[in-house]
Image (cartoon, rainbow, N blue to C red; front, side):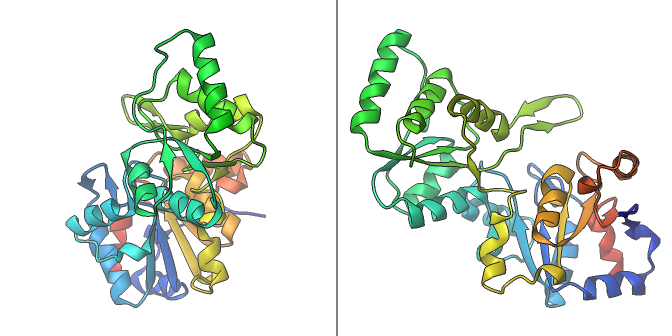
Length: 306
């Protein structure tokens, strides 16, 4: 039966080093683990760089769809993380890579922002739909326009990412493109429903994905955590051995569940939405799929051991 995870602050230096020596690959979430927006969490770059110096394979695995992989790498480098761009796994890049391999003809309709558009452009994917798009005519006229698009547009994929311009018209278009083509690819960058801050909440991509899924009565293929597909390529190519891999994150619903889906050990840091008291509550409620193997208040707390 699952038990309360180890609080790693209770380990001494030798025990901590022994624990990390048991892993070859470390996957690290970004927002809430390494930084908050543009503010770095103290000592996180020092900790990550120490792991790299020890020969660990470190990957940054994020659900953030507002930046390209290259932009995330530039951000990481500006904060002194010595990570390679190829070791950053982002949903915008994953979507573009998937379409490069599977969209053999036609074009993609995209509900999403500039980062997703940049990644698709870089891989020569034919797409449309980004930017503001609101009802400017009657609903019946708009439906007629969408019918024509569906018939003549050769639309073979619908993508949903974070889009501050999300509108009824965009939902209408996505709904009809998917309804009228059963083989149409349906992807989403992630299904995070909301980002909660101390004094406010921001609806996230998952809320938009759920709206489209409800209309079409079909589930999108999620290209972010907790979908195991995020790591499948690395696992299948032997670059990641699950039993020697540690997933570090701040969200139980994405990071911890993702790690469990992949057979990784999991470490929850308390710099995000969940802290030790929440882990104890999950154990009490027998929500063991949310319970990590290990816990530490901040990733930066490890620096003292390296």
